[in-house]
Length: 489
Image 1 (cartoon, rainbow, N blue to C red):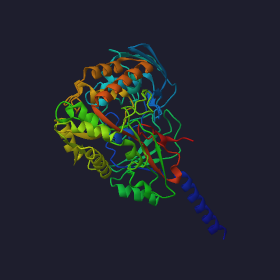
Image 2 (cartoon, rainbow, N blue to C red; image 1 turned 135 degrees about the horizontal axis):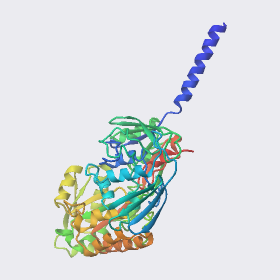
Image 3 (cartoon, rainbow, N blue to C red; image 1 turned 90 degrees about the vertical axis):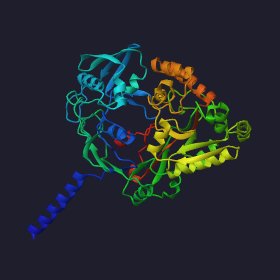
């Protein structure tokens, strides 16, 4: 009997040891679009960007609420002049491979970004840099060709090993990183990440699987069945009431902006009174409380109240009576509003259209797929279009949308805004170093945009999370990124 009993106990021990070695199942994180690449040098979409930031880290990271740049691989920095930034690295931080990260790695990475082969977002980081002086393994000084206030935010970009910084594209995520996770496997609809032994932070508690499910109902069913643990902005407000325990729904305020861009150089909205009337006709608070189920905040200006640069106390007014009076003075009272064919967005647009119609203006809703919508915006073939900037972490991003030099094909100023004072403020905001001074500049910018109503701000939409019991700790940052997955205690 001793033999069989011994064998049984041995098998039980092996099973227990195997179970312990495997650990708890990974946290499954569901997204509605595919992770196209895990190479941070060649990003073209927001989902890939957020995934790569789980694998890689930069000199800086962004505060999860205010979006201030704070040290990450850097221990500290100091503006010696308005074109000279001295950086001290944390000592002994290792890449996933075990190699210690040094100032040479930082310099090689930033120089590699000068290549036209990387994404435009990265090449823009280096174009302001004149040279980089490496002074020791942990010290370097970045010299700018001219004042560039957004450098600290730019330094959030991932730092790579010096010998890999300029290597050919590696979309499978095998570039050595400094982030909390290492890639275990990469496929079209599934990315598996395991905690990294080395990096800028302590190893996370959980492995993570990022799974792509494009159909919203399928995402909701997978959550409810217990197979998925986290979904961020992947279940529309209209479906949230169907979410039942043990799942819960949480949210965090956001630094995004949903707005209506207007063609301001021709057509009906070349008239400032028409633009103002459109804004006055929309009941932002009612729609935030109903269609958004309280998971959105009416946007009074461009920057979210959470953002470090937000200072204004101005409020957008809802006045259908005044809107009706202004619309009545217009020679033309008809326009098209281009929208996404997404069910929720189309419903939102139709409700706004009815509000505007009640004030005497015909706003025809035209749902278009993304490619067709982009083509019409690029050639200026539109009156109005409902859009969203997913994150305004650095307010200088507004230059791409508002500066006259960014009119297509040179940028995303699709409304053809050409305002000398807006241009001046955007340029000042890019060149002024002090936080309070920059905030004052962007407050002036927001006031002009509000007075001229070149955009109609609508909402800052919360990041809404559906979570399982085992993922109650997770919240995204205000820019929608997923660093909360790296929970270490």
